[in-house]
Length: 377
Image 1: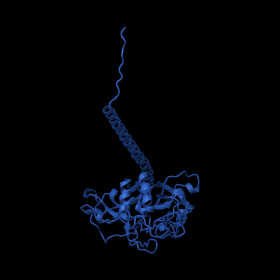
Image 2: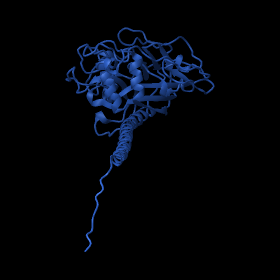
Image 3: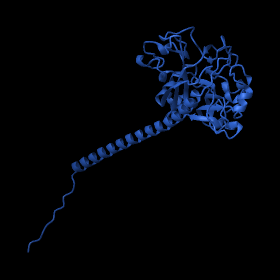
């Protein structure tokens, strides 16, 4: 009778090391793939979110501008203001320093750093033929709308339009109304929000009711009603001070327009923010905020801006308006808040250029060309 013998052979140390190494490589590859998938998902989600906001904003602005009301009667029918640095507690959106909600560009806590600092828009530099080092823009992109910085508070755009409405009440009648688009740096939560609540960059669309527009008159320049801050929805002063209900896009860190006229030869020429001839040559003196474009037939529109600071003006009527909006990604929102609250967390001193470096690396720019279809009479 023969006995069967079974031998047991264990793994050697070398075999175990090889198996562990192969497993570690495979796990590492899976983690890398998973990380790439998650990053792609986050980027796609961020772009989808900002893209939806931008589409809503640009569609609404297109509807408003295409129905803009323009008349050659000496009144100011459209004004675009390159706003000054918001160094006061309330900025240009409010007349009172006690307002803790709107446009507090200079928070007293936890850091004294003034976000975005000096106005960064330089029309001459943005049309140069060489690389603009201060903007980190290559020569071929210099002057393109998506590479322009419209300053600390962006462009404040207001005009009269006749948007279609339900016509169910006097307040919803299809009639000319005053509309304002304005970028602010605001505490989340509204007028009663604590100073310790997070701060966000928000774009508002304010609209005055038809009856209030009729009462205040059709002159954005000379009517005190439009230039006296009033946070009541539908009030003429709503043009200057929006309400929390009038948010049209969140996390907007720059908003600007480029306005074109048509010269005697029929060519489109830039009138704002830099007045140029058909060849692109600058006309007039160098510009600095605040200054305004005023659509009026008046020979010399007089506009002093807010806070007694003189504003430069360019009279005329718009033919085409290019719009630019820059929206932060969720990661950009996080980094900007961290930087503004404590710049040392990012490892750099509080500088305008560092703020812009973070903002531009974590945002998406959307542009659109809008033709003014109103018949100017």
